[in-house]
Amino acid sequence: MGARAVIVTDPVVAKRDRAVRLGADAALASGTPGLPELVRERLGDGADVVFDCVAVSASITQAVRSVEKGGTVMVVGVPQGPLDVPLDLVQDREIAVRGSLMYVGEDMRAAMTLLGTGVVPADEFVTATFPLDRADEAFRAAGGPDQMKVLVSVG
Image 1 (cartoon, helix red, strand yellow):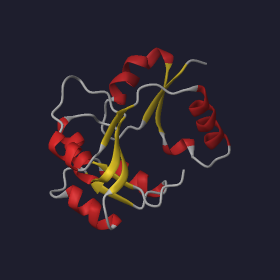
Image 2 (image 1 turned 90 degrees about the vertical axis):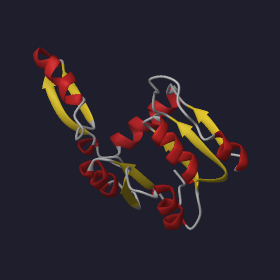
Image 3 (image 1 turned 180 degrees about the horizontal axis):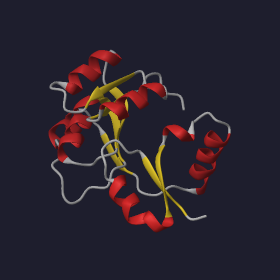
Image 4 (image 1 turned 135 degrees about the horizontal axis):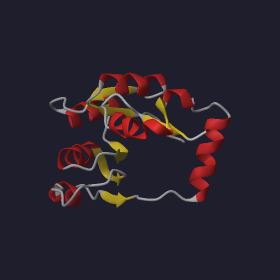
């Protein structure tokens, strides 16, 4: 979608490996000491946009520290309550912090096109499928660290 470089962070090795298979330029452990500096080093500067898909204080702080002056932090993850945000850096670097909650029809159509044409391989995302009579197992499995998308088959 026009990115010149993509760096993914995650605590789970399997998810980092998957990100690289899917085209990320690098995948780093989210708990790596000095992660924002490492991201800046890899990019030659800060990121233009950082997507925070977790929304906890540590991930927001990493995102703000990793984004370039005038950049944007997109909060996609759903926070469980109030979070600490390093407003000193937000103000000093003139960083925009934006939230995103819902998808619109255009997003869904674009996603279906990417999946339907094979640009995005669905088998990389669907990591488990359960029949309807085992839906309780599916919900438990979905909380596992190695899962991406767990499906419940109705038919």
